[in-house]
Length: 382
Image 1 (cartoon, helix red, strand yellow):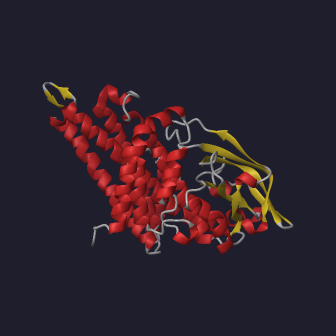
Image 2 (tube, one colour):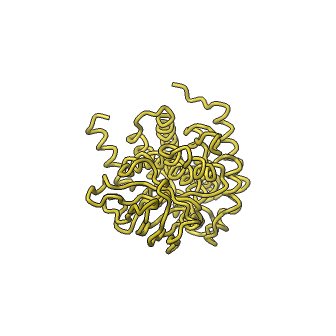
Image 3 (tube, one colour):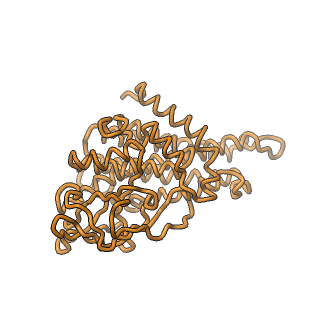
């Protein structure tokens, strides 16, 4: 088993790490406080090719692999988890389904602008009554001549307030239930009947916009259907598998930031005449963090490698996302404890890391759902 990175993968990791340290970390607290969209940082990531890492160059992407995606996204998230999730959604939840299920015309029109970083994308699945249960979806799309008419509201959509393009899931056959779900590519800026609804005030990832998408007799061209009618559920599940690698990578980056800060603080903070890093209680916390984060990275790299090989990776993606998210949250709790009162203060980044880590256990499949996905695959012998 070869754990060595290729020269290209090393370059991605080094470039992302430098960008995190020089660009993202110095401004992360500002954007967290103001809730501003970090437009310049996102544009710079686009220029680096990070908004479409695995998208072929002919469609504006970097033409790299998913291992590079894990390496790049985890470093970006170490610098700023909000920017990390913006990058993750563009790559995993938007570019992946358009690249995988789109026609050549759809790829040229809707994939290239996002993969190149010129525009942002989002993914509209969740609704107020349909999160872990997509079968409860109420948004509908009805064919009227040469146009689809969409009605409904999507909830908690990352990038929803800043995206130009969206992949939207809607019922095209109510009687068929989940098998009647279809996917559409929507140009939000040129869609009459669409508006951005509520933009959420959140605990963490505050520089990443999370919004409602409201469709009221919104009309889109007939050819904006992604794949076949009724194929939306299968597309959705495949897309979420890829997305979970992204969120696991975001969690890994947050965990690495926690460990970095905890190590630095523990070696300078003195109690009883010596640095607190000299105490076994602190050393054990640091050791547990490091081991869990390394294990998370290995799980993520395995899932990414399997995606690159085009083999079934649902279980591995769920394992990686679940373990990385739990590890990041556990690290953040202990990180705050190591810093003590300073860990609870906004003077230090640690409290932001704790707020940012929590969402990784919730979105793109709660960790409870991840355990169900893993168990389902185990019981099927996969």
